[in-house]
Image 1 (cartoon, rainbow, N blue to C red):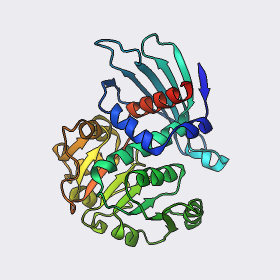
Image 2 (image 1 turned 90 degrees about the vertical axis):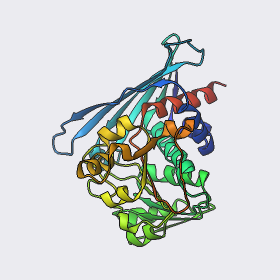
Image 3 (image 1 turned 180 degrees about the vertical axis):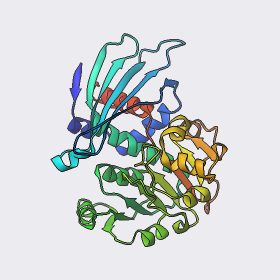
Length: 320
């Protein structure tokens, strides 16, 4: 068994490679139980969360030599911000799907950043307008850089506007993109930025909607990544009601995502109103964008399939 750190993951992965591996992965037969949530009380700080995300190749038929299984163990510790540490930390254990022998332990946080951004880019490849060139990034945390780069790998992004509750953090984020083929600027005016955007990507911990449906222009694509509990919310009911809605998985999104569960409870969305999930888009059983003017919305809560595919991709590259 080998250890694979964050730097090694960065060295072997590319944005296009990650997107294409996920595209192929969503066509595979993989067993992905809904992830386990274990809230943890923390004295003197916000509650923490332990997440367990298992997945394995479906070996109920013939067992292929490339069959794998694995589990991601993630701790979400909001109080880490005050300690100067990342709020999301963890590890991924990859095992042979044939023998069960451990193959690798990978940096879980970095793997999550790559696969999450890759899934959003994969969805955008089906749902964003082909000529989308203005991106708004809502939030300037660790995932934001990966989302910007991933979206730029599937669409001709020229302008990126970043909004964050802290203007200083948004400006620092924008400065890290100096010399890139697209321009990144910070803004205090989220409404104006969203009104002009072709793609709106959000990765925050917000419990109140930040993106308003009234702001979305015809043809916009909305990518909601941050909220991972029913209490969290990044877009309002109007945004959901105006859009053709897609999710990474129905099983996860209809239980864990406030951007889906709350509009359903309010009557702004029905279960049948969820047009499709990533596997259906990748297999061609559901169509993506149907017109240049329609508004599309993708809600990601994460699925263990993405982690398994990403870990396998990294392990294969390092072991080659």
